[in-house]
Length: 216
Image (tube, rainbow, N blue to C red; front, top):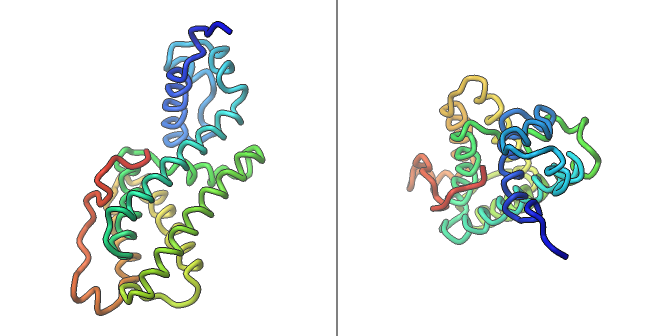
């Protein structure tokens, strides 16, 4: 079958790039196909050619964002020597998004959860489940190594970490002040460090432990 001018992966990628930024700035309910079409100077029919409806576009956005985030977590593990450093690098992923004056894609969608299609709701939940599973594993590694201290199941603390970072992003946003996020995340992570570890190596402000551009 002959490929048409719209039947290219580049067009789909451009659509996703624009839509992702709009979601992270305005929210999923804060933009329309007309907004994306106008910015890309294409017709709404061209958007429907790649993504039949806004629900399909939303699912594609979450899938791509989650995949990039998973890649970033794998790199955090590869580059960071221990659990405290991995937690620092994890918080840095959120900070880097906030520096772009954006919100976590799934975090902002969670704020609109009740208005999302069922398929998107499930994808948002999977994103947070995957993050909490990764964090619980890192936290347990740190507790066994004696570099982290916390009470109760690691999964409970993992949920606290995700909730605190997402909430800190949300609260920092209206002030346009990333130091609010840095203060909240710094207190959170320093509180998880084992006392002996904290004394031996005071936590320094993270400056990009992954060595790569993180999801935006």
